[in-house]
Image (cartoon, rainbow, N blue to C red; front, top):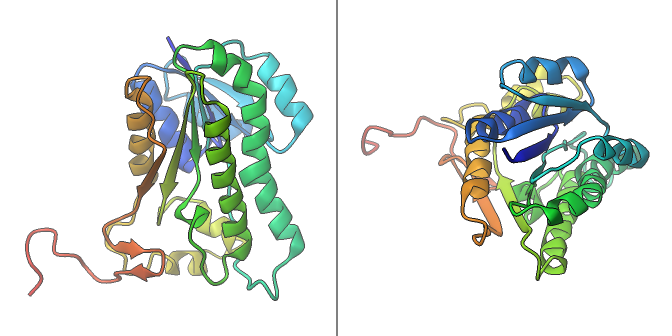
Length: 253
């Protein structure tokens, strides 16, 4: 049974991705900082293991990976946004934190697992980045900088692994409504977080992104989806979101 490690596996896209991969026959390892959330997710997935891990701690990553054994699929999902200040008023500590969790975390876990992934006939790395990895917007300077860096990491890694059987996939979600992303970004302000999705008819949910990851992983090993961009129908572009009901059953009058 192939083994899949999913970082940020205790909630949101990570938890949904773990469930999708488990359904497809993977033994799933859920990695994250909150043991209680990991155990809660693992309880619903037969054979799932948990790994309490801060992906930004290089020593902790090295120690944890040494205990894992074989791994066939790595999903670098851990990440997040902190604040939505302009560049002029941005907090350097927020920028550092976003770069650490989104980019450095993916770097450290990838480095630690590459020997195992090279040994596997199914070696696959999926980096869950964002449309923010190639598009900027006001108030998103720190987050888009971190995600641009993660996209650059992904593209560079694919070039450097040329000649191996390891696939490097980037899944780039647009607007996804999860329990924590916007609430964390706005420092617990649930009212402000809710306004991000106000009026949007069917934003993506975590399970939608998880299906995209599972699709990329289940393809034959010689097939590499370099970049899969996924947005809700209501989001035509990063800056253009339709905030009224959509005519799912026919033309709008």
